[in-house]
Length: 315
Image (cartoon, rainbow, N blue to C red; front, top):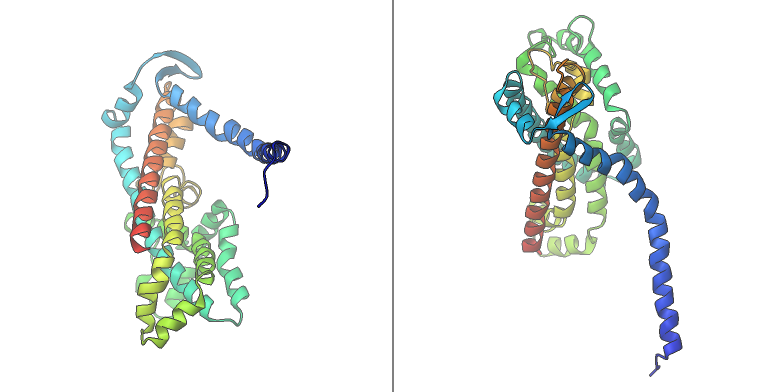
């Protein structure tokens, strides 16, 4: 039995202290960047939302007047709920698409060994391209004049389905949903693929020997073990949908055309801050940004808590 002498204890304590110091050295640059580019702008926007502004000159403290303006004064009182509902539709659509198609593709690729890396790369490529570029490319492909989508529909005898996809208010928001989900589906494919690869094959083989069908093995074994990955995809999809800007801007412009059918909260913030011409643009836009952050932060925490609770119940 070894005895821990005072000298050995001091050496161990010194080693722990040095490891903590070394860790802080590596973490410090990230903390500095986070404080400069995220924390400081966030706190600044919060403070700006409580003041009246004349251009770039800060006026008197106004309390919650800028927030009240958003809910009681036109055009904000009309645009805010409309843009918020489009963000919700974008989240639900992207969530359904990514969690179903993404999980299905990941399951197929997990079982297929041949050309696995090739297909993973193909599904991931759109995820690596700028969302603004993706939006502009799809706007060209969906053009009613020279877009290949309508040309293909007419060529295969489905000309009745050809239409101005981005010019029709009934279909424009669904185009935004589709393009967003199409670009980001590669992320859940990779994440679910990694999660599936971490499930021991012996468990699935034992269940198969006990007579469990493929669906029973997926429902009772695979799916519960994918809950952490599903939680990660859900939270990141929610954050991405609520702060979406590039694709809606590329497809519908800053006005959310046509007829605000593609308007989202980030576009409303952009218009209020840079295009409205209001003397109090800084105060009102800061209030929009603060509300958006608080909503995203609160719901993300709630989703994480619910999924963690569900994970604990399953295990």
